[in-house]
Length: 295
Image 1 (cartoon, rainbow, N blue to C red):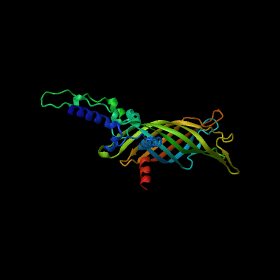
Image 2 (cartoon, rainbow, N blue to C red; image 1 turned 30 degrees about the vertical axis):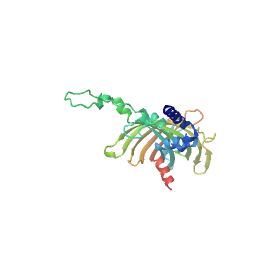
Image 3 (cartoon, rainbow, N blue to C red; image 1 turned 90 degrees about the horizontal axis):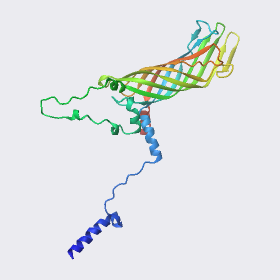
Image 4 (tube, rainbow, N blue to C red; image 1 turned 30 degrees about the horizontal axis):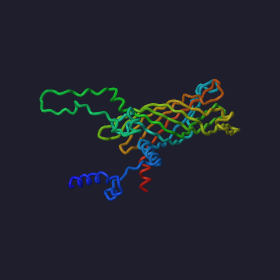
């Protein structure tokens, strides 16, 4: 009889979790799947982590070539312009972390993809004999760890002035550009900030603009991309950047845009190229959004 009772108790105990009696036991919190909105916010938060907004003060002019221009054209800078850009940075988001694993850091937890430790480095012994030596670091890996890649979207004003001896032609154009850079970044000792520099390319499309011609008797204005303005909308060329990032994240840089695309339409012998020198101040977007949330 006792054996029968024990068997019944064991069976009842096994069945309890599947019956309604289990609700009287301790309830563990069940994990919930993130909603679509939460996933979108998580992606945006990762983007903001390595993004910054960058206004700049620009010195712009145009370079002219062709038989219609004087050999020594009196080309002077236009009125100084101001532009605004937003950049996303991949690689070097933390010390010793370069562009080679920037994509991994964006799409997943960097710890999950970290290289396993070399067992040779974990060897602990009281033996006086030399143990296995760790391999020397590869100079290529050391160089790659300092590289980062940034790209963004920029609203920038360009233009120039040309005096042909009779009157002055002044051009103002606003472009929407996609600039990209590969930068070499060097962390200063004692957390004093970071030096960086590198080059890249940009592609731009003209949004609007005017060409104004004045002399002693006339003052005419044309749309820059009209037949009278004679300019095409496409622009592109090389970028050169050098700068310094403060420990707090503020970035100070100088950029030169060297236009390679002839923006003068018509296919003639005359050519016009954009040139820009920019003094830039970048600030992390994450810090701006964090301050707004606190308010």
